[in-house]
Amino acid sequence: MLRHASRRILGLGLAETRSSTALTTRFYHERVVDHYNNPRNVGAFDKNDPTVGTGLVGAPACGDVMKLQIKVDEDTGKITDACFKTFGCGSAIASSSVATEWVKGKQMEEVLTIKNTEIAKHLSLPPVKLHCSMLAEDAIKAAVKDYEAKRGKSVASTTDNA
Image (tube, rainbow, N blue to C red):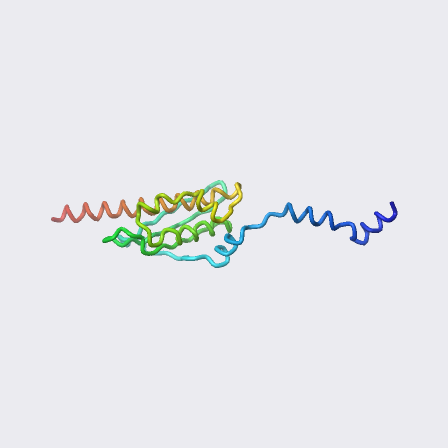
């Protein structure tokens, strides 16, 4: 009994406790940390540019707000560039960064097939952070919708003038 007490006082018997505590500590996956520390494509385009689509989405429950913008080549329909600004946790920033990388160089129809589950799997997001990947998917869809709405207006205005 005295031996166990002295080991505890000296910290010798804490090895089991420390290792079990380390197992319960949650860490972000290295991809999340990489995209958080080195986010890709941070910035903004002119929202009035007719080749730019802007998606602004938010999650009131956690306070994350994500703005994702795409720049589209009007001749090919291919996304030539993308950028984002996100106010939120590391998982939200990483999800935005991944989304901008994934949409570049793809056709509009193709980016609409990107699902939040693919982003979450790529980043190894825990269930409590899945809303971040959902925001990224919603932001992509909102940016495409905004671009298509602008394009519809520009087509209508040119036919009205003719």
